[in-house]
Length: 323
Image (cartoon, rainbow, N blue to C red; front, side):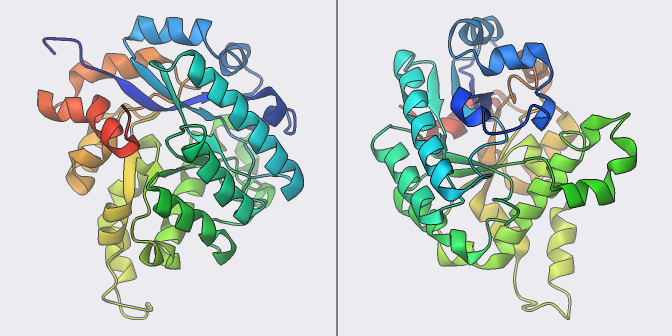
């Protein structure tokens, strides 16, 4: 590109010390010292690496796991404290950071209230949810108040993977995890878990009830864009509840896709063709993925400069109302 484009990345993780103290060290590659260093760095190293990569703004979010596990009372307290601290991090560097809040989904009403506090009091741009809540998927009606509140506030919910339940891990991956632990997480298990959640949300009726709901999926849509035609066709066959129901139409209306940790031109072009370029937002997945592979990918993207600019920053600014 002739001039440096503005670059905004929106799935960029940190760890709050109190939140992380409630979870085990085995969660999501927490044994890697270089990752741990960056998860707990809120300014110096993070901004240095942003500058080196040419990234203008990171939208910070807590890395998995988050306040989707644990008892309601504790998670409500933990989420509030973590969000207050995150607001201070953003306040210290307002031109470099924005934020998705933690919401304590074990108490759905409190989660909706905390989402509203994050947006109206702390200036956050939405919230991120990591996987099922104590084993329960977000499509269950107990969680619908969260979507009602997000619609009212006109902010997106970022649905992020978390490690699959032990029963799922044992049934599907157990024999290979000693040699290939990444199979359970970013290699496959994360995507299956998160894509399943997204599909359930479309089928549940919550999006029809709250038509203004906006949902973000990372990692090039967790594979759904590649299978969108087939999913839609299979769900419209005889024997399904409503053969006129269009999964494809509803998914394309409610979902935005980020490139986090998936810098593949074939995957991107598939997603562009299915979703449209206005629905795709550049992201890295820092620090689990370094900035460099994502930045090095940008010049190779086979799109015009106008479309690249939308993906690199324009779509994020519009969806998140970044000033």
